Image (cartoon, rainbow, N blue to C red; front, side, top):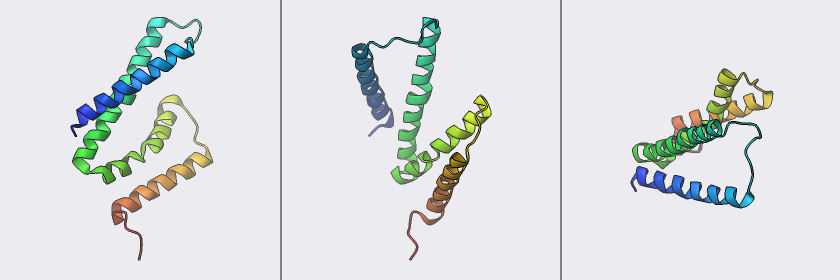
Length: 119
């Protein structure tokens, strides 16, 4: 299928379901926050973190194949932790370092062996 179409359908259906949940839950945003700023941040999160990310995944699947795209997508938690440390000043915990090492080891192993188990 066309990755843009699949991405658009996923995003539209997700937005509709979360919008319905928000309406029925009637939860308010953080008190005292500027409504315009909150809406702009929500829009930025929706576009960058959802639309761009999903479109990138679906285009990657078309160009690389599902297996390679899925393997690369496992790097997302590692990249997230590193970016949080760089931009937000978050500290790494030993468990996060261990988890990142396991993920990186698995990705390198999959890339070198093509996912084949040792004989």
